[in-house]
Image 1 (cartoon, rainbow, N blue to C red):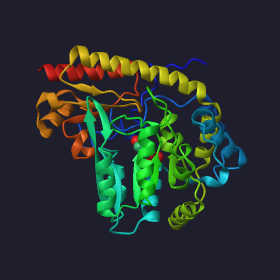
Image 2 (cartoon, helix red, strand yellow):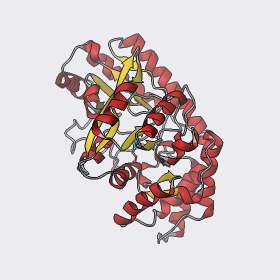
Image 3 (cartoon, helix red, strand yellow):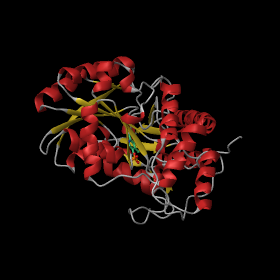
Image 4 (cartoon, protein in one colour):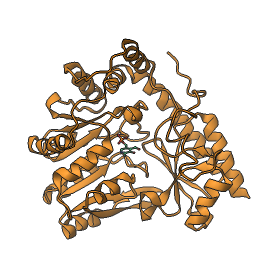
Length: 389
Ligand SMILES: Cc1ncc(COP(=O)(O)O)c(C=O)c1O
């Protein structure tokens, strides 16, 4: 079937975090939201059918994944990334951020330092600080519009702070970097030298525009043994509200430590609707995803040329992956407060301010382009008018 991404139903009035919380979060009521990372599109028809079937049946008792769940999951990753997953490697958690927090508890003690690369998706910092650990930040360095890793500093942070855990974001949110095999191998080697466990958050793996995405444990047996791989159908199929993620840990010892934390929080059975939706998505969502990726690629083309033509003061950091655009607004020469005022009050846009992702984000804004073209165009016209004024 052909999907229409131009005219999805309105999300207003659905208790949507993106659309229905302007007042609660101190924004004007008529603000256009392009912030939190979910999409404005319904999930694939097969997923909707699976959820309708659950509703028609009407009983939402406890459920558990059977062999077919793991077969479907493994087939998706094997076909797309050359990574076959054994059922015993998989732990299910109600979200990737939950898994990041559990990993912090499983592999470090209060007071320990945990490595991140900044700017980064803000819960990376929160799960470390909220669990009374300390943040070691390896700043990513923009070189000609492409963020690069300072490997000397990466190792220096590990050595200086005795780091034993690294939270990797791959593809990277917010910079949109898709790490190359060489970059991943080099980070992996340094981590191996110093006995660092790597949590690889690959939730954006199905949205890669230029390079190919590399699933970290496919790089070497050594890396597979020190990696906690976080995957989820939430971004790929727009199912964040169903709260399912699959955490894959090959190393039995690391898996036991992680499982202990899952048990300690009292989590056992996954959501029944989430289970049905996840199976349908990974089994049948490929065609929808192919169409969606085409649509998002066109959105990105539109965004790129609009900025070049009409708002050259704002530079797009070309996303190699993710549906999040990292906008370099530093040429506008505004203070953080003035920039926030321009975006929120003058343009009437709800974006994520760059500093939420770390101090390196000063002068940047993150824009979610997983919306209908008409919404994107409206947002960009508002932004142009505000900048022109
Ligand atoms: C890198 C990254 N990890 C995790 C999440 C959220 O995952 P979940 O909703 O499963 O906790 C997001 C959402 O934007 C993200 O960008």
